[in-house]
Image (cartoon, rainbow, N blue to C red; front, side, top):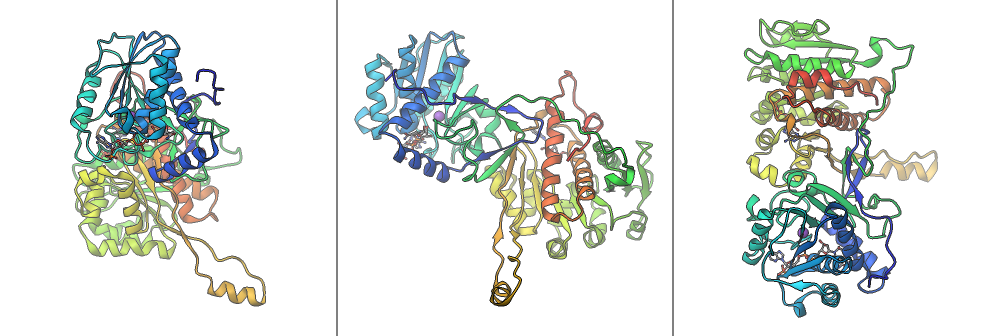
Amino acid sequence: MTGTPLPSPPPARLHLSAHGHTLPLHDIATTRGVEQHHMALLPAHALMQRAGLAVARVALAVAPHAQTIWIACGPGNNGGDGLQAGAWLQAQGKQVLATLLQQPEALPADARAAYADAVAAGVSFVDRAPPLLAHDLCIDALLGIGASRAPSAAMQACITAMQQVPCQTLAVDIPTGLHAETGHWLEGASAAQCVHANHTVTLLTLKPGLFTAHGRDASGQVWFDGLGTTASPAPDAASATAWLQGADFKAVPRLPESPPAYASHKGSFGDVCIVGGAPGMTGAAWLAGSAALHVGAGRVYVGHLAADAGNAWAELMPRALPDVAALEHLPLTSATTACGCGGGTVIADFLPALLDQCPRLVIDADGLNAVAADAGLQALLRKRASRQQWTILTPHPLEAARLLGLGAQEVQTDRMTAAAALATQFQCMVVLKGSGSVCAAPALHTEPAPASSGCFMALAEQYEPEPVTPLPTVHYSGNARLATAGTGDVLAGCMAACWAQAHQANPGASGMETALHAANAAVQLHGHTANIWNYGTTLTASVLAALLPRYSG
Ligand SMILES: NC(=O)C1=CN([C@@H]2O[C@H](COP(=O)(O)OP(=O)(O)OC[C@H]3O[C@@H](n4cnc5c(N)ncnc54)[C@H](OP(=O)(O)O)[C@@H]3O)[C@@H](O)[C@H]2O)[C@@H](O)CC1
Ligand SMILES: Nc1ncnc2c1ncn2[C@@H]1O[C@H](COP(=O)(O)OP(=O)(O)O)[C@@H](O)[C@H]1O
Ligand SMILES: [K+]
């Protein structure tokens, strides 16, 4: 077995990328399809041999000095990958001890062959975790994409042991206990029933659950191996079911610098209006305005709902909004507007006019709460897309729950579905914030094919455009340094500024696509700024706003 040619390329390590790079994500059904396709092309058992080799390679890379390696193997093919890795590692001179939670004869065929390889290589079998030292390693090969319920009692004992070992843990494909698609715990399980790995080597495809909800905490450093089925380190893009933004297989910790054209002026970078800052929450509007300014909007107006709002930044243009009529002092019909930041309950009075007039509108915070509470506002919101007026909603999980009439926990249980449901329900772009922010869009209607004459004209008239729903994007950038008050206001202002500039640069582009681009660009800039903050002090929202890099397309 050790003479089998090595599949290439070797496992690749996922890194943050400042370039807004996208990588394809695949759900379980598509992953199964990819697996079946390649299994049919390869000799029997070859794919699992490659999977085992990929796991062994990562094991040697992350724990080069390990002498003892404990592998907890479940009853399916994830366990088979573990057994196969054990065979490779034993052949490399490691002492491999495996705990197998299934009778060997009851394993699926590939895993049974892996078991035979492990026995032949000299792997020992033990009932429970052996004594391990800090430089040793344990491998979680209990459950992969076949996990269907909370771990069994025997599995739980292995998970608890893995939580107590003094060495690193490497998960195969997905940490046991985590749902591969949602990043939530398996149904009926909790954090205590999930492996919290230092590393995860995921196989054939990148799974969305590794990157959102609890996924980032449970997975540690993610590695990918296409098992020789892809020419590049990235999995196949054609069959993607979502995108991951902000990660790459190479470290690129620098933002590109593209200076603005010499012959440009402040009118070249779009205007932004902020509407918010009710009494007691004036800071929220200033934070959003500051963010818009730093991201590079040409002119930023702050319409504040409090009578005495002060002025935090000399560069911002304040406009007092004692009543709805005062909105005429803002260039709402030409600018890009972010509303709701610190908007209090009074923002509800302003929303009908904003929904009516603003061609590009980001609705955040209290603006979202107002919409959730008022069916009339919801109807106005839904109508906007048909009038070519575009909207981005930026809820955190509780705001999303209010809009959907669910509990916040239900939203967190399946963040991608929740974001997509909001996008469809309100015909808006949606950024569901939190760890692994998710951007979703409603179905886009494709234009009819151009027809020039005769029967083709007649056919074109009958042509019903097929709606196309863009894939959701999960963001890899961002971390818990953003978990401080006001960072959401900063995101809203940042988004309006990205959107204003993207629209200004290309006013003829599809409004919906520009909105989607702006939503993703803003989440990336915001998250990236938190990723590079390394000063040991709290990243306050004001500092975050001032550090945001200029939008560069
Ligand atoms: N074949 C190949 O060449 C390749 C395979 N690959 C690998 O295969 C993995 C998928 O394998 P898989 O489909 O066998 O599913 P897997 O995750 O092992 O679990 C299913 C088993 O667990 C059981 N079970 C479920 N939940 C349970 C629970 N809570 N507590 C206890 N038991 C539970 C379930 O029992 P059942 O529900 O049937 O009663 C069944 O026995 C994939 O993630 C990747 O690692 C790739 O590397 C590519 C090459
Ligand atoms: N643990 C985390 N990991 C990544 N991003 C986070 C985390 N906590 C918060 N954030 C980000 O910080 C921002 C917080 O927004 P929000 O909850 O609206 O805060 P606020 O209302 O205080 O401004 C969002 O962009 C969110 O995605
Ligand atoms: K696993």
